[in-house]
Image (tube, rainbow, N blue to C red; front, side, top):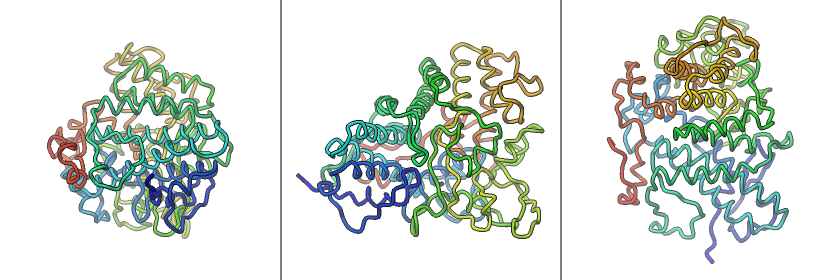
Length: 490
């Protein structure tokens, strides 16, 4: 039997906040030497989680790299003068091609996480320990694998389905043809369905792990993306009515407050701590690239059009001043600083503005507001603008305007809308609710409105139908040009 080097898996097990593990490898370790005990199984799954928030020497997948594709590649975000990577600027202007280093990195990071999950799933059954714990760990790995394939299929369409660790480093054996979109979704649904058996909660020191509620929530989004309205409704209602304790925070700001991490609205978040990965590894870099200090220097990540995005919030909508910052108090001088142009604000650590690197604000993959709006959308598409669909949207709106969430309030509530009007209202709420949360590009693509909406931004008017998918990285096609045909327009 060949010995498989697990360096890429093990090197990720570094100060991962969601599991309280500190495992730093010092040499090559083979599978036969590593997978012996239940602790080894736990460490392998820690490495799977680490694929989301750690990439030595690079911006991690959910620390900012995926943002380039899902947010800067959409309409509201753009590259500022501090963004010096020409490939980032190309994505911002939608002139990128198959040689884009950010697209290649996203592909690599997603498949690195998938491979780590495969290694864990294949080998955990062999270790000593509790069968209950081993099954849980396998399903956590399946959750991450399903989540990563969900990112991949939406970014690139059909992608290779890899479900087991490689048994050879021979390039020929590493090739994998593109599967159909339907086949990828079938695998995603299978992984997430298995993950539905995960625990509903964990101990406080294990906050951030995948739960049964998180699996159902991602499944709801999968079905919504597929326009499978009955199953989107079913899974959304299971999240809401499943006794998980999910609810909206009373304050929108609490979603992005360090002391409120993994709270009642956070269904699944990527965990971040200050400098969590040590030297040479990156966690979240959102603060350092959205805020360059109390100067007029334009940051790397900027709002593309103030009138189209900042100015659209009604008076009293608290989401604007959380999502964007026009003013900030300088903690060193006590001076209130007004920026020439609003900067992004959700991931700014206002208690740590003097050291804006690798802050401890988590990245929300899915939160309760998303489920409320997803259920409203699915109901409206299947049954029309019912009272229930109105109420689900109104709960999100009431919180936005700092009103009691469950109490009808005609000053902010939507009433009596047609299905077409409610569809547009839901889309507008998502636009205001999920700024810089990796949702916008996916929303526009699934609605079929990407070209129409992005064309409204002058600097992005080169958008075309090709931008509904990203190119298969040329470096991957160089290995297998036949099995990996390029997406149209690239």
